[in-house]
Amino acid sequence: MIELALAPFLPWIILLGISLGFFGIAAAIFNQWLRIKHGYPLENAWGKSVYPQRNDETIERVRLLSQENGQLRAELGAVKDRLANVERIVTDGAHQLDREIDALRRSN
Image 1 (tube, rainbow, N blue to C red):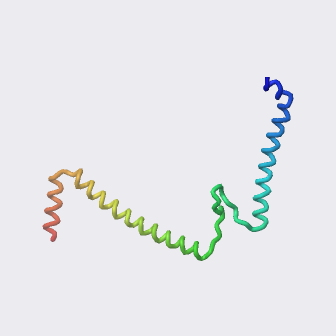
Image 2 (cartoon, helix red, strand yellow):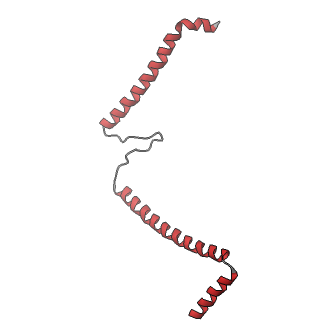
């Protein structure tokens, strides 16, 4: 019975929903336009700036992070080399390992 009572108003209900969606999108676009016009930084969904301001603190932070990244890459390379040696020792036969140890003893 309720469905029949709402049937004549269905086009108006649909029009209201579409118009609310349109006005919501238009308001979001207008809000962004105002923020850009007045120099506010744009924000993503979590409130962080999309285009962060570049100042001395951020430049220094990027420099320190780049330096730390270089150190970690070098350390990772050394760990990979050590792991390759351990894998070689584990997978090689005992005879070849004995020959390499003897060769090292002879070179000292």
